[in-house]
Image (cartoon, rainbow, N blue to C red; front, side):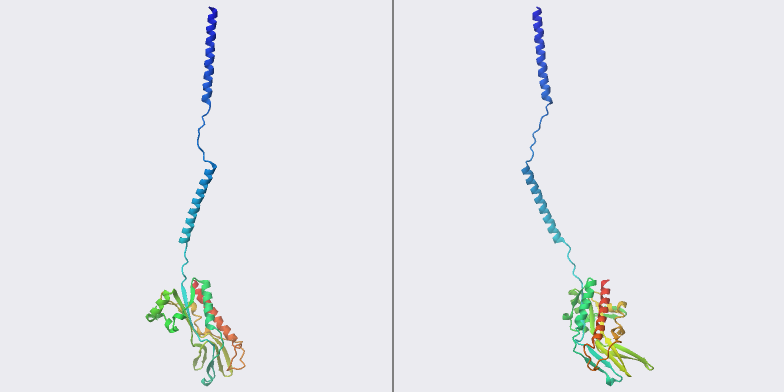
Length: 297
């Protein structure tokens, strides 16, 4: 009986031991993490995607560049200043003697290139210091008489209706201002005495001489009329205070103290006239500088 009882106890213990082992196996399997299978892109696919992105970026940049090129700032055309110069080709010598029988005016065939020199000086000075372009309007004009665009009526400036057609034609070509330089007689010297004053005129650019009682005067004569007008509004620019000195005949006719008397008074050489030419060119320099200063404001 005791043997049977012991046998039953051993069987029971064996069963209990088997149950514990099974339980441990289950616990261990539950503690193992489960790996999830997520498909990762291969390196080849990643490279292809980057290439597509780069291609898209490149196309976008090209479109942007083209848009900037189309919509980029455009240069505004410059306003133009027309220049008309009416002067003889050669310099002259005006002489006023003790009596009118000694007076004469003579032209010398010396190629001073006065017109082209003045135009170049005006163009260079103005274009370097302002927004304007300087052009020669001579091909459009028959003579200086056509260029009287601005007149004064009842103390007010207005356009000369007789020249409206030419004025509008120049405006259509972009010319808004005009400079007219015309050779004309100027007062070279004024002499005053007991019975009043007398004026003596230089007939053109070049040399002016005056002989009286054994005394000779040698004067460099920049004998020109200067007119500067606006075509888009009635303004006589040359009448403004800035140009007052240049419009004075005393400034256009300069006595050359160091001038050497010519060997032949009736036939002055080009070399002997060199100081006269230099003085006239100096007047052009002052004119160009003043005009450029006005248009630079």
